[in-house]
Length: 113
Image 1 (tube, rainbow, N blue to C red):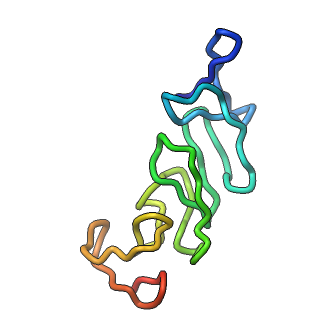
Image 2 (cartoon, rainbow, N blue to C red; image 1 turned 90 degrees about the vertical axis):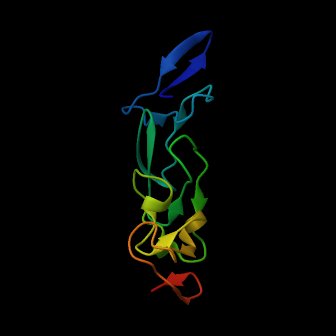
């Protein structure tokens, strides 16, 4: 994490270069994608609102196409990046059991209330 391997040497990813590596299996530093990311540091990604990723060690980013407002973006991936009452992949499920806070029911397609 935080570095790539090139020409038989490890090379640190840098904030100045807007490069990152979030998995121990990454063999290179990746350049920030300004279409989906607001910022990066060597070991983390800050997503724009309307995008989602599952966990810290994954650079797989998905667009929240059904209801972009459900995905807050930010530095923290997974359920904490979802709008209040939402959780799961692309923040499309309702927190019906109150796992994150109080329980929320489905009020409309992709909406919890």
